[in-house]
Amino acid sequence: MPKKILIDYREKNSMVPSELINLGFEIEFKELKVADYIIKGIAIERKTISDFTSSMLNGRLLKQLEELKQYSKNLLIVEGVEQSALYDDSPEGINGNAVRGFLLSILLKHNIPIMFTKNAEDTAKFLAVLIKKKQKESPINVKKHSLNKKERMQFILEGFPGVGPKTAKKLLNEFKTLQNIINTPLENLKKIIGKKADIFNIIKEEY
Image (cartoon, rainbow, N blue to C red; front, top):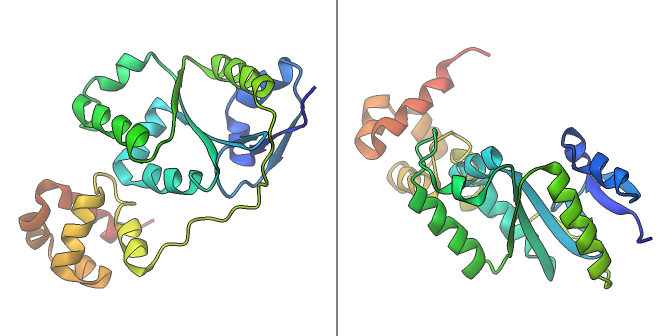
């Protein structure tokens, strides 16, 4: 039996850990700085379909992929439906070809392999096979990728739904500071980024 499978504590909400236990594996929840699962030195990020598309839109996935590359062995699992469903135009307005291009970028630019699974049970079974095949272990004391000032500013803007890297850079190049963007009238923002600017109405809303 292999050693414990290290799992990020935020994965408690998924069914994968319980499926791994049912398969006879010992698990341990930890606060992992990078990845959702560490299996004998392999860093694994798991995304459901909805999480994949939303994190693709807000830029969070790109940051996670960069952090994942601190491990010499890494893997992205996309879980939930058949792979072809990813290519349908999504409710969030993502074009199927945009998803195809993003997947190619993950494979070719970031050199991170992608595995598609049907559900939590399928994911757990795949991880079980991976455990049996992989023998070499690596340390887990990696750190979060440290963003510079410009990256932090861009990261904050990309937290708004619909604001991707290109839109964030366009706003920052035009207005220079986050404060200037927040203080700019909505109509002026629309001249730069169109209807996407409507999301900044949330700044005025009460909690």
